[in-house]
Length: 159
Image 1 (cartoon, rainbow, N blue to C red):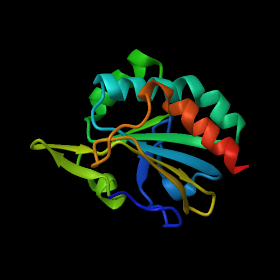
Image 2 (tube, one colour; image 1 turned 30 degrees about the vertical axis):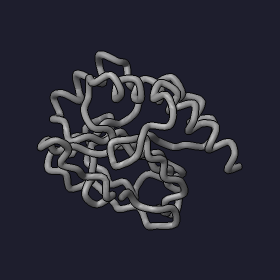
Image 3 (cartoon, rainbow, N blue to C red; image 1 turned 90 degrees about the vertical axis):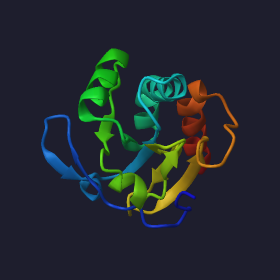
């Protein structure tokens, strides 16, 4: 499961920090799109906070934006963002359509959620890296609290 490197990243709509409707393809530069199962769970919180802690460094390495996507409600994600001081964009994929388009949608133990998969996307909207961090049939191979650092190192290696 999950889209492979070299695949065209699906476009999706989101609201920017000012509440304006935007599309993923409208954002210039290299981007990170990470899907996570559920806000406020230990693994998702560790992953999200690691990306928060590395956000400035990721931007310094040429990442124009980070998008976190889950099937949680807008209200839950707004609370998650505020409580953990997350600077990047969180998207409530309540109908699962974005998750399905990226092939990470899952009915896990009768609960609908996104798998824990992260993509780096090049400026031409091509997926450059796919990092599967569990849930979708793979064991977590690294500490989720190091996810942002791992992505930063991966991006540095690509330069």
